[in-house]
Length: 196
Image (cartoon, rainbow, N blue to C red; front, side, top):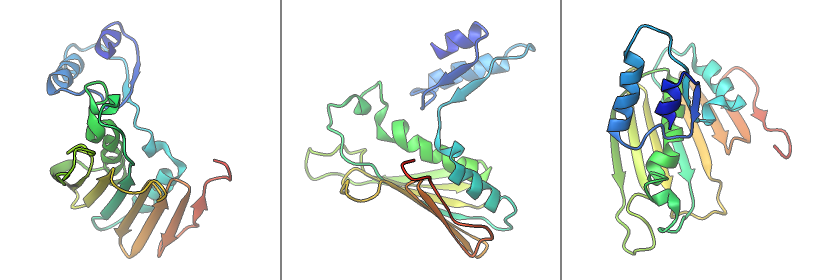
């Protein structure tokens, strides 16, 4: 549907992920590489990069002189195996949710991913999916290393998302998109408005 809209000259905002199959990506790339006329805009709905916290982090690391270490934790919570998220429509939890964090890391580094290494645990029971609990490590062209720990086996009583960035003697610590603590960095800590 997105490709049909693009061919009709319409700008498109599509939910993440952009596609679930490599052939679908190839078709979109072919559309944009063909012809000389201007093409409509295509945007994938990655939302975390637009957070005011990420704007502050991005500004804070823009003048860095060294690569970063980025640690991201997503305590995603359990979703039953027959839920649509696990099926073809949702693409699984890696492509359907963790993709937000891959985009976020690319945004913060402003660099290309050179390699990805992912390891998952194999559940001893049939309660969890084999793709529900994993650690993905990305190496970026600028030398940054980013790690995502994604788990469905944690308690929902614990916060879902947190990120720490270590760079040039500074730490940026983001907690649940509600507060950003800066240690060593110039600037003020920020918090989301109450009820926000």
